[in-house]
Image (tube, rainbow, N blue to C red; front, side, top):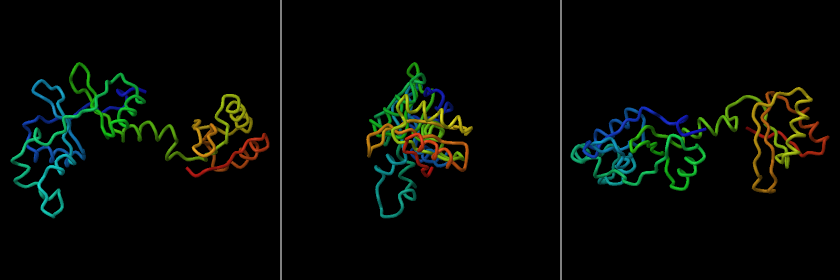
Length: 213
């Protein structure tokens, strides 16, 4: 999957001259936590976020969002924006984008093509549209873990055994266990009762068990 498949394409931007109060209003009205900042040619020059505004706003002991008033009206985005940007291309893979977000410890990435912003992708986009479907989060059914079942031959045997029982496999993935260092197979089954599957896999010599989703 590519960044293009996930990114928000209709990006709202501000300029360095935009009053802070206007940027805050956009974020609050749209439910955003940050906005890209562009120059007069539409090229990205930074990012302004609620956090960057709160960090630089004078503190008076009252809730920070109540301190906007005249301070925010007198200051511009250029004074509070973060010039450090993490950029990806629309043709980059989601894996590359995720690695960039993690290594830079940011929650959003600017998607740039030919020097101009064409989208924005957030870690929430990756979680909800990639991680959740991949792991079957929110999907009905039963999840079974087969210890050491994630190797090629073992995975083939496990899948064959489940198919013989006529149970539908909805999602399947392999993951190394941090405790036993084995490559476990996780199988999300389209059934509410996986006892026959677990029993058959145990009979074949595999350590299988139902786990909470």
